[in-house]
View (cartoon, rainbow, N blue to C red):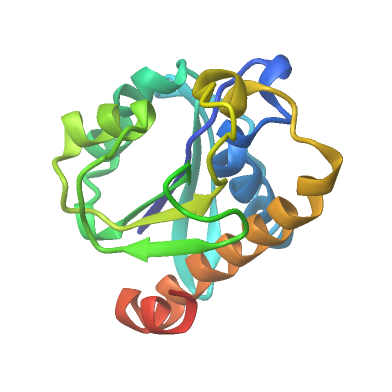
Length: 183
């Protein structure tokens, strides 16, 4: 069983922001594989289904971003999921806009949601980082939680589609193959 986690902020005000790339990717996976992500438990919204013959749980933590690890840890403990079967998807300012990167493990960088997940799981779990670029003016908070400009929407939409495809590739062919294909 795989746990696929999309990081984001739960309030409607944040739905069209760079910080919700993880949620957007999970929504695309849910839509393509007819998985309803509407059950409330584990401090999140989740749904279970099948992708490429593998059972999966899709999770969107409903805590604020900096507490995301609490939700992830509750699901991991309840279902006894190994870290190698967890895929966390999130936005990353250190990656160019429109690019995704897959890693087997690593430190959280400056991302507060990942800091929380790493706090509960350690650094050894797969992740997909969606590049959102950096603000020109250095206002990082407004950049990640402010509205996405029209000229970036299509680029980020393609990025979340790539991230969705990368999740499927990891499940179907393994993380090494996915890294070779998407990095």
